[in-house]
Length: 158
Image 1 (cartoon, rainbow, N blue to C red):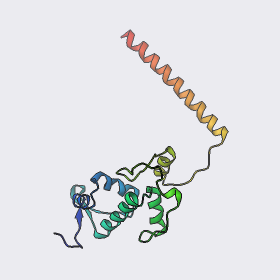
Image 2 (tube, rainbow, N blue to C red; image 1 turned 180 degrees about the horizontal axis):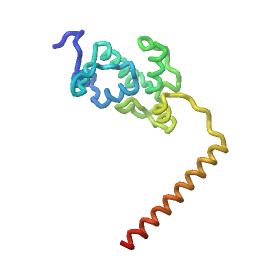
Image 3 (cartoon, one colour; image 1 turned 60 degrees about the vertical axis):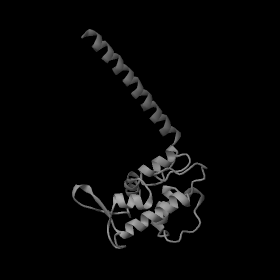
Image 4 (cartoon, one colour; image 1 turned 90 degrees about the vertical axis):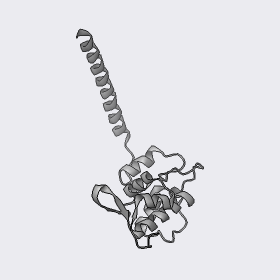
């Protein structure tokens, strides 16, 4: 048995928390506060404080049903140890189980966009911009169709 101050491998942490290794790697991408040491060959070594943070994240996601975004907000505001009751948007109320990565209920395109762009809010697109985007998409579809027909013609002549 390792001491409480010993560094742990991803395999040990995965077993200890009963969370798949890929989920731990995913959480590293969502929570920059988790910073395992990486040694030769990319092996991860988690410090005791990393393991405790992962344990707290696991409880918030799986038991308290926070969303990834909600846990990120708690970390940003420094409220991880004793969070106040979550805001409605921080909790999964979709009724479905939370999946391994901590997403629960239905993940919408808006949720995915927030994860990709760092969670920044963007103003809604104007009708003029939406129209312009639609026109560009239609033109691209038309060009793809033309290219497809040209490749068919080129293939028949060979």
